[in-house]
Length: 429
Ligand code: SDX
Image 1: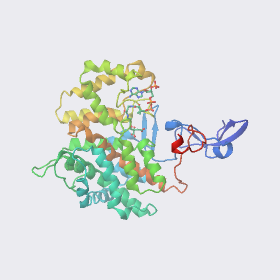
Image 2: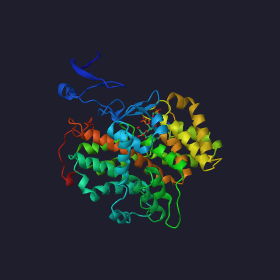
Image 3: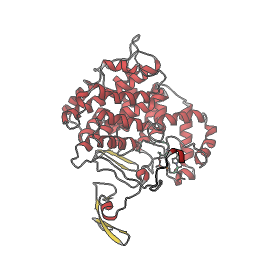
Image 4: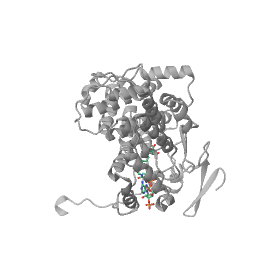
């Protein structure tokens, strides 16, 4: 393999393939002409060695545990910025100036209300529906409510759709929560910042004054920053694939949310908390560690392991710190779930199975404890992930749509089914 090309020998034929280099991270071998030249496809289920696109948004170094949004380390953004600043950065590529930030905040704030008919749309769901079922349905339904921002060839409509989704996602998530607990929906209050407004829409009731706790609001805002984007993860790849056919952005983001819901992905925050509750106490940990290591047992440590991170997920470190801040603020001295989590992490990180497989806590390991302490039910955790990831999905969708070389995504396959055979009429089978 040379600096700019690599060679592959297939059936005695030598095929040259260009090597493309990014700004940082592994280079890629461009196999785009491989089929035309050899009649063969590449095979990589799970995409462990396949880059599906070029992107300038997020960079991960999984071995070093590094995460950058547009070049900025996640630690710096989480410590110094706010979520809407991160949204601007992901969408526009640069941190905003003070006036750009004020204008962006204003524009997002002016889209926080949802069409009043949506409240009636919600009435169609059962009260015991999972909030993610309600989210997937209501995000998709936005394309029925906002026809005037579904033309993807119009940059203005793309921008309006983006603003609408970032602004309305907290409103929809809060409505999904209120609906399950049987309380009236709370309208957004635009004098509040993005995250304080969301907390109020979730926890205020008409019968009482509600004062937002600034420590909790800041902590949740940081949690949103941590979840905002993560390059070509499963849900983002789903958004890109859905968008590659020209589907409208609301439909694409609904597809992403549906993918996120799975327990191997964003559903892991809910699964991790349920697991900690099931383990219950520190004495039970060895039993569950043994189950996680047993190939014949489907149990896995939820919130552990990652396709890309073979080191500590940098978000998990910030999340752990945030957990302590939130518990301190709420005066929770002894949280048995936190005790179990800390001990589980300690034991897992000193166990040869987890060391050899490089399994570390990921972002979902500590987030559930924090969100639970804030008052969110377990079933809402993935909806909060979806709320925060919306901006990442949109930034990635926008990047793809604005790329002139964009084509429909269409993977091929290794066919292993029946070869050609004759149809047999039903009476002769
Ligand atoms: C997210 O991709 C992203 O960027 C996602 C995300 C984002 O921000 O978008 O970071 C968000 O989805 C975080 C991940 C949340 N999921 C979980 O916490 C669920 C538990 N973890 C896993 O199921 C698993 O680790 C995955 C799904 C996260 C990664 O799966 P991979 O890369 O396909 O790895 P694998 O399942 O093939 O595991 C490799 C080995 C296997 O053992 P062997 O067959 O090689 O012997 O490690 C073992 C696995 O059995 N293993 C675990 C384990 N995770 C992997 N064993 C015990 N407990 C675990 N959690």
